[in-house]
Image (cartoon, rainbow, N blue to C red):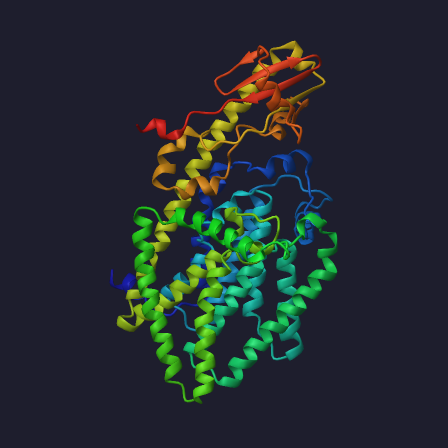
Length: 502
């Protein structure tokens, strides 16, 4: 027991830190690997070995799969890409740990783990195709932060190329880089870095970001379609649009703070506030002019709201605003900031107290396993739905021989009733799952049904459901109609989940 207790506070070597992060990162993704659930876009990508990343400005994601599969497409090789990305993430976190703490202990490692244990990042990891590319974009921005070289040219160029690479894998990772820059400034102020070095640090980061954007603009950006690049309409109340987007993000984030999670994060916030006071005192105690101390204090104060804004960050400014959990990569940096400040406060009291940071990490780990069980239930439900539709279509000649069967687009929060209890206790699980449909048309070719397509803007299948025709097939979840040579699948509205409780 004594040896283990000593291990928790002793200095760790690079190999020990790497093994710690490798174990911690793998444990977090085990539920997703066991669930093995093709998530939304994974269905059509797996059928066609599809790419289509370049038109989203993510050219390097295509190149990643070209290299990994030795082909010009992207055949499904899950979970190999995720395992490779996890290994790369463990290495990146090791590098970041030694960047922040040259003589790290276990508690120093805990401070950076939220970059991976970000609850909203679970949705990114759920994508069997896109997830590994998103992880590698995170790896690239971490190495951009930790790269050090005596050559000033390389110190400028290499991080810029890494950030450009990250943008070409997943643009939202820019939020993480900017957030880590804010953390770097805060850490430099707490360590009382000389004014000239502190000023140069800001200049270097701005220069790296500008060059990274130029590299990205010259490489991956030209392939992006116009609808992906449209920004907010600046002639139509842009600040109101921003406020609406921010309010939607806050509403989603609030889903996490439920039950015990609220208490855990409230305690974390209190510790972080104490750590922020210590940083403030460190700035006041600097041997510097009042003007310089004032500027440093102002920048440190501004880093806090900036990191909060970077939870969604650049996504807020696009006209096609996406409020999905996968865009909240910046929440991981916010957690790291809270962990860093809490570590400062707790270490001041006792060297072992920072180990308490393991409590919120365990809470996030338990969420990962709860989410894994929800994915397993969703997989079971989706398989049952697919078999039901396949049986009904295959057993009716009119449907087998139909020129085309149109499937209605019907959204509901109540399809997965088997997870109703989990959704009630952890509302964020439903937000992470983000599946509000019964079936995707892309699933049916898996069972040999190739004449089903999703209805388009005309909503022809939905309209047929309102016209009073007698259905050929009546199911608890849907009705199937046949008119001439065409079929129409119309989904019913499922019963509200709350009916299971009262």
